[in-house]
Image (tube, rainbow over all chains, first blue to last red; front, side, top):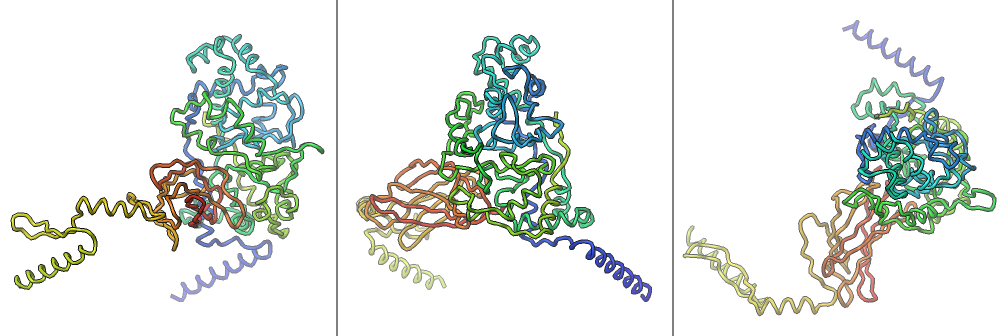
Length: 391
Length: 176
């Protein structure tokens, strides 16, 4: 009994020593309330189960995925034969390009979004001008500043490739050379989408912590850095980040004005979501059109009910935060080079810059201390993982 | 014991008869072949027509018979029954709503219901405009509703009768 008491005393002293040492180097790890625990668990589990896109009849088809992968780096999709999707969505850079604003045939207004976990999106692009991945995939092909091709040019060039023409017929049941140019363009975009759907991010240190929290596995939980735990507490609490960045993909899939300048040039405004909705509704390639393969029409529900509102001016997509630390720069125009700069922006945001009539109450200066800023960045850094291609 | 029971039954029958006379109803026993059975107020065809006419002539009142799964929302002025599809609201997911006007104050039928949602803490509404279809007198189905942020949403149901609007409010709090 005496030996047991002595051992217990030694253990207690050891724990106290560790705590004291830890206290000298940095603040302790966060403790989470039941409410906070619920908020954390809502960011998983990861990965979500794969699900094909009903609007794309070749979604999940291995032959379409292979064709899409080939076309993704095929320069014949550009008017000058010098560029492809890879120009701005480089697999070696997590399918982004590291530039503030991408450069195709000319410099565009926006930053190249890293391509991953795209099946989870409701809208595509910084302004949501497309409502499907295939609808988004054909936009850079046609954009004069990007690949600058036409549907006719795409058909002409690909029809001259017997292997691609044969695969096309196998997949879509018609001949590439005789299909209408817009049909060929859509089918090429559907193959590109089938490939891009397979690009997903792997499990992160946060996912391991989240699952350990769910299991009540304290041994696994302590492996998650203390700074990241404190940052997570800010993320779901004081930072109010989960107003927009929630769920397994850390986004609500919508758009908001967070006080980032929306001038594309000194005298030209990027309308953001307002322009995106107008472009979407005018597009013959949206999900309300004849190219949607979903016979139920369920995939078009968002498109049926969206319409421009005044507050959409200057709103841009709420991006996923998965792999955020490896996909700088940030914001729609790539105006922030580091995660520290992003956190500082929210800490000191100038509410006068907010254009929407709602933002003043949603986005407010967080007034984070240097320690809190560092902790929030430490948390964001735990959301990264290597890409995992399912095909 | 048996007599007392019979006496009680007779008393109950008489009481029921008196109660039925309050309305233009006929009180009848459901007994068959001498068996004991409950008695009910049976509505005669004439009485039924009279009651329906009365209901239709009453300003702002509409039928409010709803299936299981409807919730009620009321104020001193008005009442609706509603249900969501799917039944549990989740942040960021589209849902539909069936809404039935049960009671409204003004003259005339409820010709329309305007369903909207606001987030008071943030000062914004929904990103989507729901579509509404009438499914019968005072009955409406809304599609394309979505609450895109966690937190407290204030759903408003505006019951429209000619130039009068009566608002009912339901608050819903969604987790992330």
